[in-house]
Length: 254
Image 1 (cartoon, helix red, strand yellow):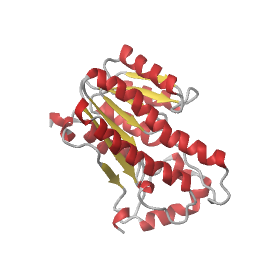
Image 2 (spheres, one colour):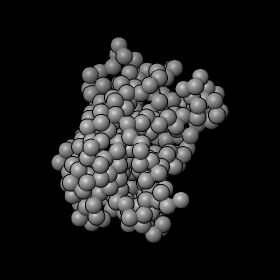
Image 3 (cartoon, rainbow, N blue to C red):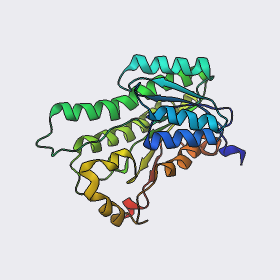
Image 4 (cartoon, one colour):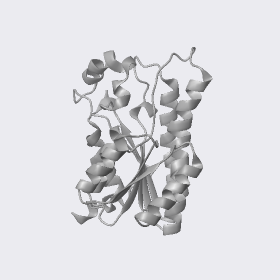
């Protein structure tokens, strides 16, 4: 099953210090890729990710910065290519979540979520895409959410939902712009997942409801997003682009 292997690939992962980003970075390394890890400069989790990747026998490179800063992303991609080789795979998982009733939400709260979750994904894709266009090939996976398609009962998060819907359509638009340049762009939309976001105080009382309302009767673990990411970045998905892959335990079927 060599077509599922990422041996020889150089990957770049944002949000690699925790949650889904960390889990996917580890699975990319397990599949054979060398991985550059992009997270906030003070992230302790990214050091753990790097150590675990190196324990798998793959190269790990820590690149610090903020996804809202175009210059730091461009510098991180340049560093990645200088240290690991030509960029060929990327996963954009950096994101935040919080909650407030729409009628009470401060503009600053709205703007921060949009800036990180949507503009940050665009800037990441732009930096990655520029490198991949130069290299003549590549594959990108953006992490959205089922909240980009459905409205979560009991959660007041219009900014988060809007940002994730934007990620889905942004990704499909990029897939079509870059389809003739050797670059595939796809989306993973997780359901309720046991990440730091879903350990937020405002979600604590909801977790049992999340489990009850998910047909598979539990929440996902972050590592359950790794297999879909490996597939979408591998040769096994060579004819797959512009797809929003729901990994939600059947939630949207109900």
